[in-house]
Structure formats: C-alpha cells, structure tokens
Image 1 (tube, rainbow, N blue to C red):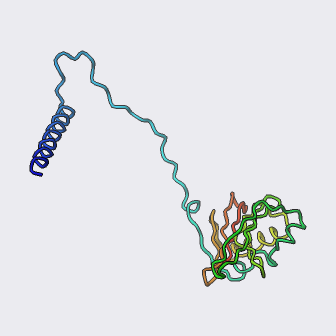
Image 2: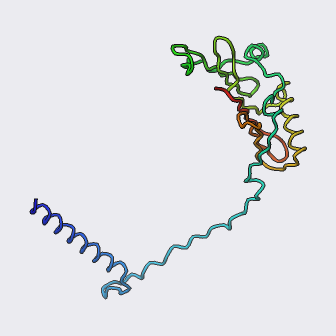
Image 3: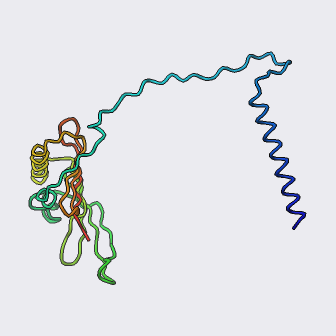
Length: 192
C-alpha cells in the first residue's frame, strides 16, 4: 500500500512539474533567438452590433378569464363532429388508465384543416387533451379567435405571446401573434 502511495505521489509531482513548465513557457514573453517568424496576431472578430429585441416581443402576458379558458370553442368539437367535417385520425394508441386498474383507454389524434386535436377516449367519454389551431376558418376556430380578441382588447394587451388561464389554473390557452394577427393557439384543458 505504501509503495502505491509513493508511486502515485511521484506521478502527481511529475505531472505538476510538467504542467508548471508548460504554463511558464506559454506565458513567457521571450521569443527564442532562432525564431524568424513574427509572433501571431490575435484574431479579431467583427461582430454586428446586437439588435435589441423590444421587451413586448420577449414577454408573455398572462390574463385570467374563466369563461374563455373554460370554454374556448364554445361548444367543444367532438371526435364524431370533426370526422364528419373531414378530419382524419392520424394516431390511435392504447393508454393505461391510471385510475381503473386493468382498463386501457385510447389516445386519438385528429387533423382537421391544418389543426390538430388530441383526445383521451375512455369508455364513457372523450376528453380533449390538447388542440393546436393555426387555421381559424372552421366555426370552432372563428369562435376561439373572436373570444381571444375580445379578452385581449378588454385587458388592453399588446404582447406577442399571451397566456389565458382560469382562476383555478387548470385550463390554459397559449396565443402567439404574428404582427397584430393571431397565428397559433394551443388549447390545454385540464384532464386528470
């Protein structure tokens, strides 16, 4: 054991001496007499000046509105209504129910006119988990867009990102603007 400690400490001493020697050589300002090359100049990087981003573009405004956060589409579109309107199912996967042992439910993802809906299907109900809306032409999109516009005007916000939630902080709507127009909305209702 003593031999190992002595051997290790001698290696450590040698390594420390080698590092110290290298650092001294690097930090030395002396040039060797036989060197004919000029010393290299430091590289200068020309960076464009940083363009400040207006604070409003970086901030997220938060609004509490129980009515809109709780019922963003008015009457929530069902899976059957979306399918009848031309939606297609893009994902159907089993999901183990966390409350009922042995029960397997289903996650269903639909696309409708560029919009995406994700539902949790249990034997007795379908629950909307998420909706990503970029096309506001369907009835549900127009209702959502007008509700967001009314709430944002009433609260007089001019943010590029808006988050609307309910008092219990369970349902949320995240809005992204492009200029002064709504470009994307993510609806996140509470699902247990």
